Length: 236
Length: 222
Image 1 (cartoon, rainbow over the protein chains, first blue to last red):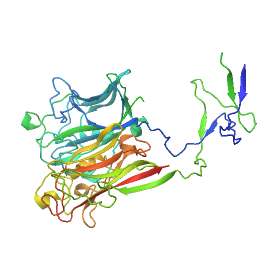
Image 2 (image 1 turned 120 degrees about the vertical axis):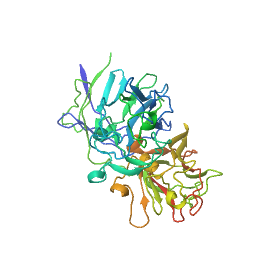
Image 3 (image 1 turned 90 degrees about the vertical axis):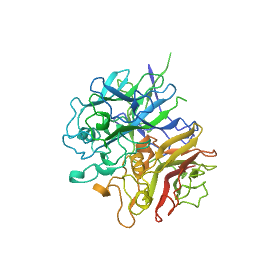
């Protein structure tokens, strides 16, 4: 046995909630944020670092024998929502053909971007063997430049909010793709790393992408790092 | 024992709200905003100013001995929601390579020794937004390449007049703060751009025509 009810305005003005012929309750969103003085949201911006050490931001490492993992991990107290990733990859003569950071060839094994949560390891991007694969993963965001300079900044500074971006201190041409989780994957608030878990976001390197000075195949002015943007959400 | 209630249209036409097998209620959102005559939202657009003095907008100052703070502070009666920052860096021969506001050409300074910092303060303490901002490109990256334009050596650089970059930091887009970054009313909340080097125009690092400022855009909520 059920009872039919009307929802009536609480102020007592006699307004009734409407339901249309399709059975839909009609709603209107306020353009304003609700008042809530708890300050539950905190800006989050961190580099992916080697084994999450918080220090090693340059991804120009040798992952050919043992895959090298750069990651951010869940926080004990607050959920982390990752809204976007800012990738910088640079190197002399870098291009969108068969090239990775100015090496002049595609990587043999390729890199992988994935996350871990209670669903297991979930791939975001696999077989990232060239610069273009990073641009494509980010769906060409941000787009600028023309012809051979499309998406490219010449003589890009090696910085990036935390010191040198990669191996060399010199400038070199670079790409700066940005992966937007709400836009690309429909995660409206971003990718969540749940508090008090082992959730992680990981960039895995399975090739030797060290610079020449360190014994690798990449030019000495290569650079490669990723910054994570988003927010921490306090439980209360 | 709970009482089952069917939600029925208030006009008495017999329409009833549907609930799906997943337990979701059907809703349809209006394309128009609700009528609310209270005028609770007020446009907000302010420069960050030196110590929040409301006057000194030019950031080419000497912070090498004592850090110089350009701030926007909370106000007593209304929340401030900062949706975006418009950053302006101008100088002759400005580039995205090893350069901060023309420092490379003027004084052969490739990057700032200490760098700038953008942060805010609320009940969670000091929260960094951008650190080690030492070259022009660090602003571009902080803003995730917004707004993208240009080509090759002039990508992101306005070349008419004195060369300028003017990246936009969108708090909604970059950090997922849908309403923007809030400075809670009647608190000491503040947004701060900290300068830790000698950025005096015509000084030891920058050219004479260098100029830096930041405008915060958003709204006040009564």
